[in-house]
Image 1 (spheres, rainbow, N blue to C red):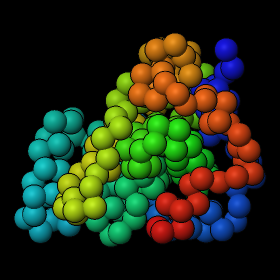
Image 2: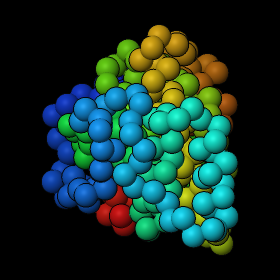
Image 3: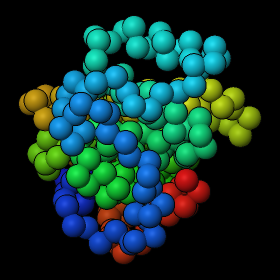
Amino acid sequence: MADVSASLVRFAVTTGQPVPDGLRSAVHGLHAPPPGTASGTTDTPSPAATSAPADGTGLEKCLAALRSAYPPEDARTYVLEAAAALTHSGVHPLVAATAAVAANRNAARAAEATVLGCEVACRLAASLGVRPDALAVVGAALAGSTAPTSGLHALGLAATQSTTVSAGDDERDEVTALRAALAAADGLEAALLGERGLTAPPHPLEGRRGLLALLSPEAEPRALTDNLGTRWLAEDVLRTT
């Protein structure tokens, strides 16, 4: 069995990938590590520097409920706030969730981590025949990973939370922002759990009971790595940011 999942993880977590300057520029300015963190890599940052608008909307009420479920200054609070704010400002939900986690966990290479996480998510979305925002938790988990082994565990954990349910064109803005917020928090959690030793299946995408087999049995796993690093499927979502 080809190690498709492992190849995608190595691609996403390795510094110095040949990311086109135009794609880096597309996400430049989206990353603002919370104040009081060491390059945005701490697990317990200060309160978010970027917050969703406190305008009494349904979004703010939902975010308030989510914040109450986490301990004070929990890292997930920061990324869900940041992802919601980015989405509310017009950033694609996949990019918003991925960028929020990249800023928190990989500040030194946040732009690169965002582009690479989005690329893997877009490739998986194409194989499954769904919109890229349905795989936002995958992009976020990879953007929050720092090593191949823990990153593979994070991908496996994120895959268990993935769904082929996508938003419709008539989805309300606050619902879209909330979905991005949840994907960011779940992706960060997957990255942290993988780093701390929680394991997952070694072939979460191409395995016999992997995501492709369960949701798109006719898909060819090797297509996920075709022209990896030279053909960029994430270009559309990144350039609309």
